[in-house]
Image (cartoon, rainbow, N blue to C red; front, side, top):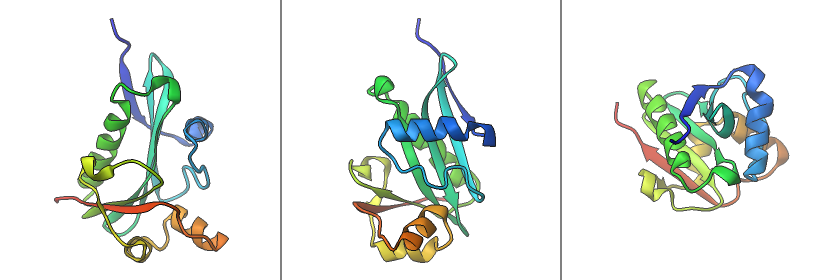
Length: 150
């Protein structure tokens, strides 16, 4: 018998859990669970194995940290996390989701590459965008966008 997997909305008390999952996956943890964001924790057998977040703007969101701990990878859990965030964004009426990625082919999730300026223009106040701007950095890797139907 396989252990059940549950994805639940993170609360402020889950900040350490989300941060730990992101760190184990090698992701940035700045501004995790900041105001204007929604995060989820994935648990298997009552233990956290994944986390994901969305930073919200006006009609768009930024996917933040799709992470599954190394010991739990390879079973489709990451796909489940991403799909749950996409469904949530669509349900809140977002027209698109953006993300920064240093690897992977996000085209399998319906994302397409877009110029960085598009994301920075649509989400100027998202915590991750502000963090890059405040540090005088630009996100590394590729910038992606997935249109959502309303």
